[in-house]
Image (tube, rainbow, N blue to C red; front, side, top):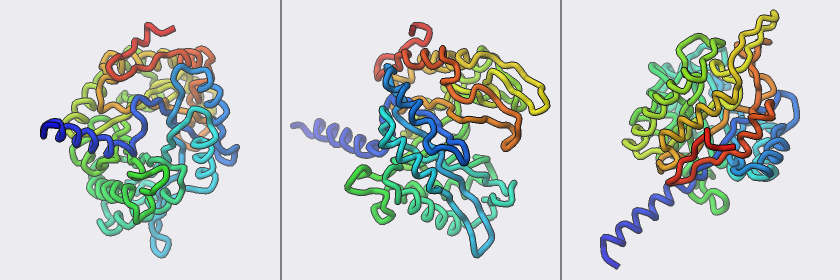
Length: 365
């Protein structure tokens, strides 16, 4: 065997090792939010039923885990992954046909805008790294957690430097045997780390912080600059998503990184069918399937399925109530992609692209 061939094989092996903790390539994911106080893993049966008939199952669960909150001493910083969230993750991981990978979604505000949220810019590096240590130890104590997705907002200055330090420390921890994140069982190379953000935020510093087990989950919805509750037309949404994909793909390539694209299979703040106010006012949007088809066509036209940096597509989302403002009685619908049987059937029969062969959304029946 020539030195050049040995070198190529070694590079290939290292690439496989570094990607081993990542979600499976070409996956279809979904964000899953249980109703507070309701049944655990409430979407498990619906997913299993869908997966039994689908050409490509929803095989990755972005299962809501909890949030990050900050309190003065002696309480200090907290990351919550309550028992009901852990139970839901376990059901999605081991009790939902077709699901093979579970990501715990942790969210939080970083701007001090709530009594329980930190102004991250005022915390020290030692404080945020200790918080990352605590977070990793908590989440890695659950074998059903294959990865972690951090949805920490705003992902912007002046909070970004400390947030990047937090992510870098968390990434190292999630690859660590000392933290219990890498083991001899399901996670020989540790757990993955993702950060949710808009494409323009994916700077070289972000990719470095996420590390070899990391990837960016880029928002492919809520792209319009208009106020929440202002519906985008499917054509306008498609143009905005084209810009996102044209931004994120070269950034991932330049930074040796991976990415997932989230798309609006259910209502978001700008891509929705109806926005209903508690006072009876209704803002009419457009059929959700039109946004979904526009997104899938954009991904196909961008040839992402032929891009080794592209890990897969994530469907927003599954929730019994999508309220805006949060905790209000103003709601966006549909709350899931399965509300409309036509959209569910479309997703079940859709031919998701494989490496080297992108599919055409308009050509699927």
